[in-house]
Length: 140
Image 1 (cartoon, rainbow, N blue to C red):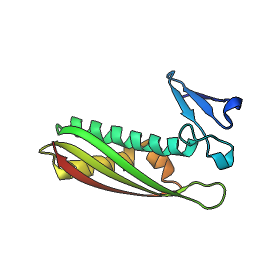
Image 2: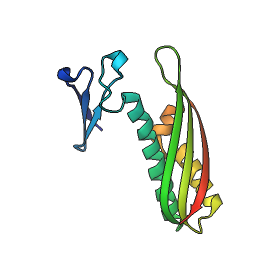
Image 3: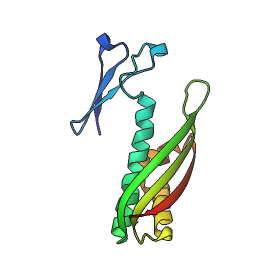
Image 4: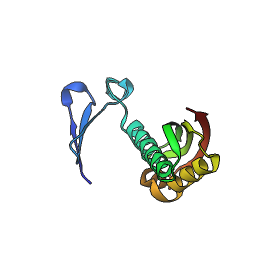
């Protein structure tokens, strides 16, 4: 896996990441750090990546288990250390999974499998952060 980051000097602290698959991600900093607040902070993209990674797993596991999953939303909230390096220390992930006749045990198992075996992003972040999960099922 590869990624190239280019700082755009005319933007203050704006950066563009080009991923190995050829996609672009814009990032910026807060005004108090020289940024202009034009894009997500780099650490926000780390948190979003973990959310995307686990949502991907949960949907895939439920589909493979023949569950009629129709939606999956993950709301994440995180706390960071007060001193440098300001790593994540707590992350809460709340899943809202929608579908027809979803089995609660299957949803719970999919979330557990993601966090114990498949989601490399959350497993990596779990080295510094206490990660908690919760879920709700919505009929769709």
